Length: 260
Image (cartoon, rainbow, N blue to C red; front, side):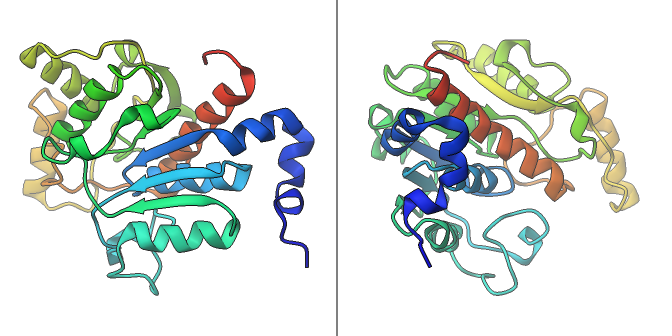
């Protein structure tokens, strides 16, 4: 059986052409967060023909991840997500150059990552403070383009998923929380960046009465906690579309030769 890149990516090449496949072979992408959104971004990029990918996450696969995350199966529970994802991606393209970093992007670790090493930075981080820091630093770097995922939980309708420049995002509580944080700190993104978002917001129907009341209060204007304290329901088809859309933004940007 022929498992050469030419064979694996024959359909990608047919659509995109040799020159664009060469560009996909050269560009370097880093994804922060390999969960419900980021894992699908990595999947789509590697399956399309991207060769140089860095994935960053500090979590281990949990049983509750199985419903929506690429590396999560009954056979990988307890395994670091980056390790499980690395093996999965290499099974797609053994010749891919994938770096797996079992770490988290925070104020104390940000110095380990040089944004100038990458052409594209994908933000699929859940934590509000870490997400804001990554956006702040990434938009100040000269080389990389940044694409960011807003909140993908509490959603069911795929037709309401869209893309837009961060300042134009409406109906997303995570985007609103980020804007409040930037305003309070006075540390704003240095340049525009595109997001994937949805304005849908559903209740957790399986939550207890007290949990449901807290959700309803948050929906009515109380601040939402984005530091992984609260748990919200999420579905594979939504997180996957968010992740695939992020990958699509990268692929389109690489192959168009101009800004998306």
